[in-house]
Every structure is written in structure tokens, then in C-alpha cells.
Image (cartoon, rainbow, N blue to C red; front, side, top):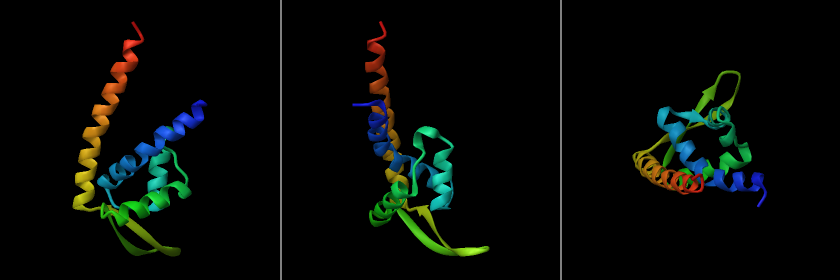
Length: 112
């Protein structure tokens, strides 16, 4: 598997967790979420990737939405974590920590 394909597959699994983490800090509209992810090149995502994830998180009850007027533009849809979303984030952090620690250990075994 080419490195770019591998990176793409790895990112798919962590983008949802990253979005939950962004929303844990504060309510955001979709482009703000994308811009925050862009600050970390490995997490950079397009609207075509983020919008379906947000819709899935909304449908699962992990985020709630509201519409607000925007100065000089159309209304914006804001996303915020629900209680269920915060619980999912907490569980995801524990799972990510266990997984990343295990992978780091396995990778470290080959360094000897």
C-alpha cells in the first residue's frame, strides 16, 4: 500500500475523534472545524470529508446543532458536543491511548 493510501486510511479512523476534540473546546461551524484541523497537516480534511462526518455525529446524537445569522453572509450551522458526545470523546481518548501505546511498543520492538 503506498504511503499516501496508508495515511488516508489511518486518518479516516481518527478524524471523528479529532472533530469531537475540537468541539469539546467550543461550539464551531463547519469551516471553523476544518480550519482547526488544518492546523495539523496530518488531520487536514476537505468539506467533502467533514460534512458527512458531522451529519453522522448529529444523527448519532453526539453533537447538537443550531443556526445563527452571520455578519455579511448566509446563516451558519453551529455544532456543539452533547453529553453523549463528551462521553464518546472520553471513551475515544482512552481507546486511542491504548492503541497508540500498543503500536508504539510494537514499532519499538523492531528498533533493537
